[in-house]
Length: 308
Length: 267
Image 1 (cartoon, rainbow over the protein chains, first blue to last red):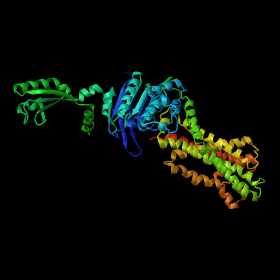
Image 2: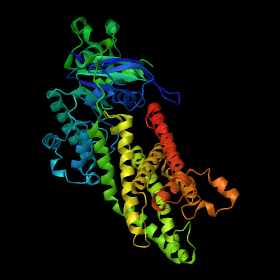
Image 3: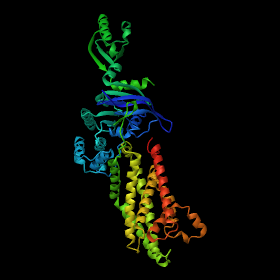
Image 4: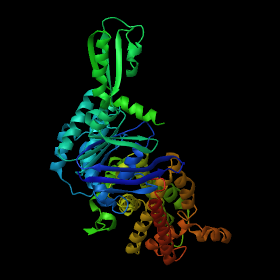
């Protein structure tokens, strides 16, 4: 896949001395959904701010579709739509006016048919004559997306798109993001919700203290870092784990009824079968078994804490 | 499309007229929504000045430089409103998006610093010029007004509106809150205007005060404008024009610096 955003050696130190980004390198590919994960203050919003022209980088180069964001800012910015974290809108304008304003601001001639289709898609068409202050929080968030889409961007940045949004709207939002991706838009979203990244993203980038500590395909990330756990419900409870089973580093749960075996995905083959064989030799019987896989959230927590 | 080194692409710098028009229209629309503050309030205030200074006090005063007092103060009053409204409109126009956070959209748009300033300052100046003309029309209801040099009058009107709108734009970016926004207009511009010969000819002052007053830039703006009406002035009209242009250039320089450094706009 060709790269649409190419970031190299990007650093940002604020006037206060805070180093928000440290030599970040990142390639964002055409048509993908990239989720940027990271705790508060990790540098996600700064990274987006630089790419979109709101924050000035200290060092480094960002190319959007080959255009330098500083030297060729007009071409670079015209390709990007930004939905910021804060619901910042003019309260007294109508929905229709503000979306058309956004299109004009990005240098495009009016296209009422296109704006209508954006508003229809976001279920805002019926509200087009309303003043923004009359909209609900969820509707305002949709409006922010409509404004970002008004100039037909190829790349869409969603900074915490579902923060403080109810479950139904979140599902709607996900559906909309998928539709946009199907239409060819590249999407970069930052989120606190691992569930969201897990549900949506093709690739996941993790930022911690201004450093991009990992960028990985979601499924391979889960495979590489995901832990699987085998839980065996024993016929007879165990007081302690027999010496003969020490090599599997098992643990007990459920007052000795559950024997737990945690293993890395790639150790799967040798681990389970040999364990079960050994248990059979020792006549330890079980009535039920269950395997579970660690979620992205667990991986994330491990990454962020583990590397500190 | 010209290919650049390092495999980057480049295109010619195309003027974003749709963007300028969008901001300009938005700002004028804002004025329409707040028509009461934008137009009726200054007209009311000016009318009160005419009633007090023109009719009540003015009727007991001699002519100034051969002009009836009521008519003499018309250019000064227009300038007073022009200064205040240009400053308020332009400073509020850029400060409010900073305050609400909607500035993100302008900063992330493919629009140059020059185009942003052109749109905001152009809109503020347009409103001020319209207001100046409305006040001029209002004043004709109270006193006989003649304009000897209409082209010069329009030139001074537009230049002053533009300059003070630029000045307001700078204040709007500089101000950290709404109190600071009011600070410079209240503490500096209004006193300078009152002391700058809006209501009197500086020739009426004792010699020492007259010399000090010549350091007040507003004197030149009012004097030149009054000259375009009645052909009389405290200082030569070409000096007035030069001073107005100098002030304009200083403001343009500061705006250029603000965008170059991102001062209080970008992090």
